[in-house]
Length: 179
Image (tube, rainbow, N blue to C red; front, top):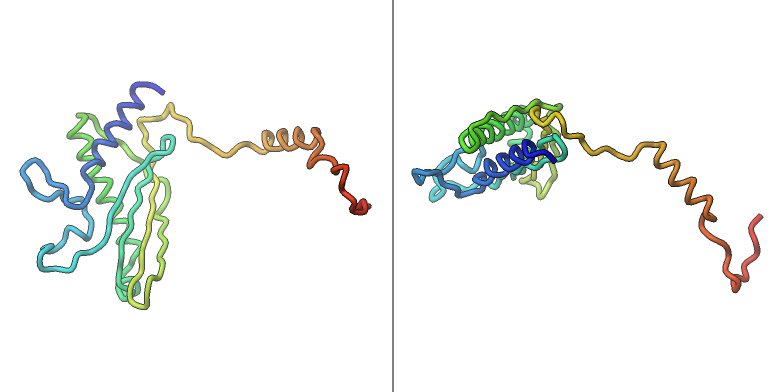
């Protein structure tokens, strides 16, 4: 792995390090990422359970988001556009922090729409987990890991069969031979 790729990944890691709930900036103010938990006063308002994380796979940056919602909010709002906005807020924060830490820009290209999953926890509440993939364009020399090709799989399977398949019957096997 080249030093350029290591520096990019290290910068992303450092930029994402302050995305936890309760994180403070240099002035002691709460960090605003764009999540629902940041709205309102934590002493008086009901806390919203949500969070996000980022991870890399090859040259793909994967942004994950999870939240607890009321069922009426899922039906009354356009949930998909809300999740898209949350993802863009998280990515915007990540780019800003990356630039502050490294002095370079983090260029990301969207790879599709938000993939969301809504799971019922009760008749009133649901959990939402969402994921969106971005291509890190400055890591063009990195190859994404792919599934083994059909040729490789066929080759290994043929090798397995040439060695006797599942093996021979044991000497003490008294079952009738299948024909």
